[in-house]
Amino acid sequence: MATDVTPEFTKNLPKAELHLHIEGTLEPDLKLKLAQRNHIDIGQSTIEEVQKTYQYDDLASFLAVYYPAMNVLQHEQDFYDLAFAYLQRAAANNVRHVEIFFDPQAHTSRGVAFETVIHGLHRAVVDARALNVDASLIMCFLRDFSKESARKTLLEAMNYKDMIVGIGLDSDEHNNPPLKFARQFEDAAAAGLHLTTHCDIDQKDSIEHIRQALEIMGVERLDHGTNIVEDPDLVDFVAKKHIGLTSCPLSNSFVSPEMKGKEVLELLSKNVKVSIHSDDPAYFGGYIGDNYYAIADKFNLTKDQIVTLARNSFETSWISDEKKALYIQQLTDYAASH
Image 1 (cartoon, rainbow, N blue to C red):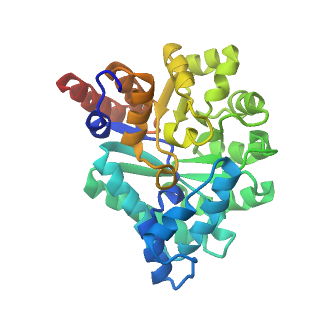
Image 2: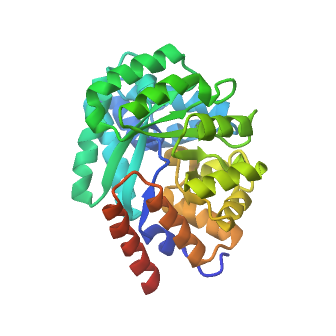
């Protein structure tokens, strides 16, 4: 048992969520509801049957379940319902600010228009203000798709630039290094968008991919990225540049039994801006408060360490200095009263 950290403490802690795939919040009950609404035969007719399909032990087997599940997302209202259901859970976890990943190519490649996806998600982002959650969208490229597909996707996204805060890179990293998309990242940065990329845990060429993302492509955050501890020079680099790392303990635990907790602690000790997030919570068994508690419990984190992780989430978010100060003050007040 973690020394002085409770699930209530981590759930109610003011925090920012910076590593959250909206498609990964598709809970079995909503999947079933959307399948019925859109007359799609998904081969399951009960919540229990859907839950049984959510089984995997590595990235490839996860993606084999993850992508087909999206077939139930067809109309603007479906994307709205998906996002708003997540945002209600975010509010319940006292997420003050969230930057939501979405994968347009996973939808356009199956015939759903880009505008259908982004209008549904953006409406939910606007309505999240009623929940007292400040939200924005990060458009991700699927790295196992072609550069040409990424080029076309970015071109289309420029029509909705005011609805997107930044771009990211996700999906299967094997043989898909960050540099494959260097041109798209340069173009996005020139258009004023923020940059982040997944550097998944324990991948082939992990350190080389992290180096490309940091030194060549100039990303502002690394998603996952904890393999960076293998290269002290790169650890010094991210510490000096205040580059954020977003770690997701529960999804990590499917690949690494230690959920990369030792690496998170090492990065904390070296003043790296590492923070905790939920990744694909419907698939990995917990939302953001659960992720904070999982790492606190397994590695006996102190309340001070938990508060530092939350502060890092605000400090590496893409919001104004004024908003950061406001949210960090809420965090400080919360810590003082607990």
